[in-house]
Image 1: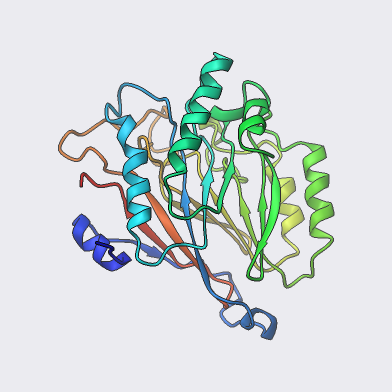
Image 2: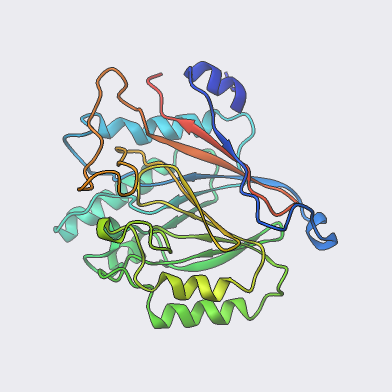
Length: 295
């Protein structure tokens, strides 16, 4: 039986938070924007395939549960994005590739076959993205969908969390090809701004990327890394962090050390989830959050 979003949330026994990513000063759309079709995509993040032990002794089932939930959506998304940390880090190059191949096989069970992947530091920082590129393809790229220009950035292959001058020049060259009213969505793993640098929740040269994007009034960023929902603005650019599918982390700076939230057997999937994002003609991106459930 297929369920729509509202019915799914009722069955899950939780409320679905909806957050409208409204861009300041953009409550109405230009004629060019109004001509674009609405569409939906799903964002999943931080699956950490290969992780074992506390704080998630059920680590091998959370990704399959999320895949089942996405497949159960009555309205299937146009495409699906995974914003990094597809696999859990390992020093063994053979094991790294094995985990990536297992992940690749698992997401092959998704009904939607248009799947966009970017690496997290767990996938790429130990070998500068070599294994990721062998198995999944480029670590940074662009694509266009129904009037929206998507830019996937790699801010993890450098172990010091730099985007790097070469990629920043690539970004600048790409943006020169687009008019000022282009609707832009950026996909990244780490936050581009300094959310909590002492917790490694930042990108060393992320401000340079933000500066390149600032002349464009319709920019939204979706990222992962921090294992929780978070919404923040840098000027008119909105940034939205996604929950993980392995374990939640505490709110930025809420305690001295960044340690995973303890496993609760009574609510084993609390804080885990994925999201559905609707792109509309008003250059806003209403977000619906979905939980991981026992069923």
